[in-house]
Length: 248
Image (cartoon, rainbow, N blue to C red; front, side, top):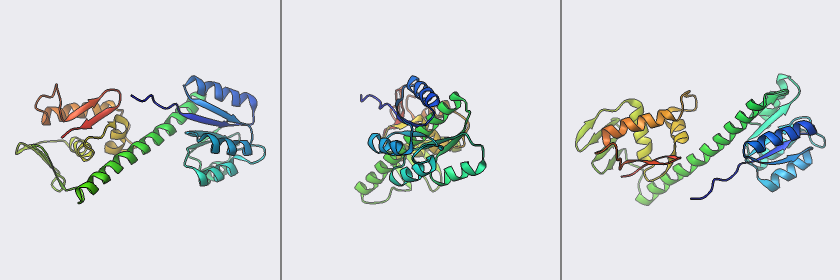
């Protein structure tokens, strides 16, 4: 199995003590960290290193953070978390308008900053997973030469999207709304490994306050209704440490 890639973070901050503190704490979290103390150096570093996240102070020598953010946003889609010592609402508005993804005012909690970096990385990972899964569905449709049908026939399991109805061996399977949506999402991506986080985001939505345990519980309920032996599933297969895969 391929080892997971270490996320790379660039810290752009002209205050040496804060820059070193950020670098130390990010390294402790397992990130690869590069630093810059001015705008021009930040641009060169980002272009060379292709980071996963940039933490960018606004008040910088050479080029300020707004200009650096504006230029970077034209060249790459890397998430940018902006920092400022000023509390003016206009700074936040301008920062978001030039392309920042998040914004923090100094002084800030290091725990909160690390949580926001983690959230930005999670958002990027989910977007990549979603792109891969959607591309796989599109390729399957192209191979079949027709759009994906509204009625999916998967062995003895039939999913009728028009009627939101599921049958197994000719018998109606009574599913709760979220069970149906989960089964349909997995079936449309059959053969593709889907992480719990991606399933949670696509089936329950970004604003859902639960956790990935919700996915596990609903998978167990589904197995009891569509698997011959729920204790040894052959359709809803667990991929240890990642999520699930639907097998026909």
